[in-house]
Length: 301
Picture 1 (tube, rainbow, N blue to C red):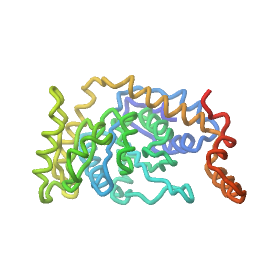
Picture 2: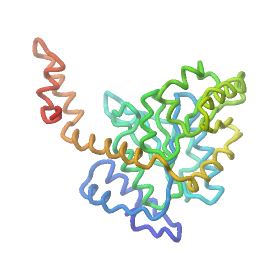
Picture 3: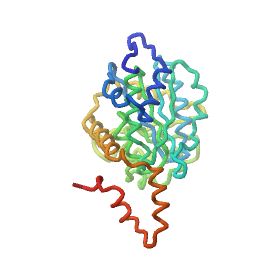
Picture 4: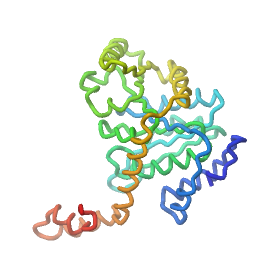
């Protein structure tokens, strides 16, 4: 179990971690007991990396892993993949870009389906991230699906959130007004070798630094060549020395998500689909009447 690892020797039993994650992810017998007995014996920051599709997040994470392990760190990665609405399985993600690290003794990579969460994060993400934190890794990286503004949920989990953009991200002012932009502890302008990258970066800096005393870093990278990755790694390494002023907010968001999961525990999505298919055969089907009859215990008290 993760809480039993010998942290002082920096040894992590990856097979034990994998088994534990499977127990937690699938709510197998003993999962609740295991979570309640987790021990966090070292400060392991959670690093969220988010942004729109096509921004190069997976390639960037791959290069970032390389930098962090070169500095003697053990890294865990939770790669969040979208869930198919038809078979409820995880869609194919970008894990192929991290394939070079699959056999590394210092890197643990696990994919996780969103399980229908609009923000790309399920309660299982929180639980599995805590398992990894208790396992003795130095950093836990969470790469989320690029689903846009609803992805702000990462702010309720990560100690530090990077928002990855590209020069073609569109009008900077519109971006900065969106919820996705408001969660950033730092911005990464990837594919910075493209046209107008400097202009985009300068305009972004002007916008985010309009508020006095607010100094949000903006990094320029070319993930395919590793350009600029070292600066981001150094920023991450400095996180452990920064006091987390959002602890109460983070814990509140985590607690809300976990309570939400428990209240919905009796709703099986596959069975829900089957019941809807049956109900559609009735004349005058009304979705709201169906929902009220289906989940009376979920109504506000």
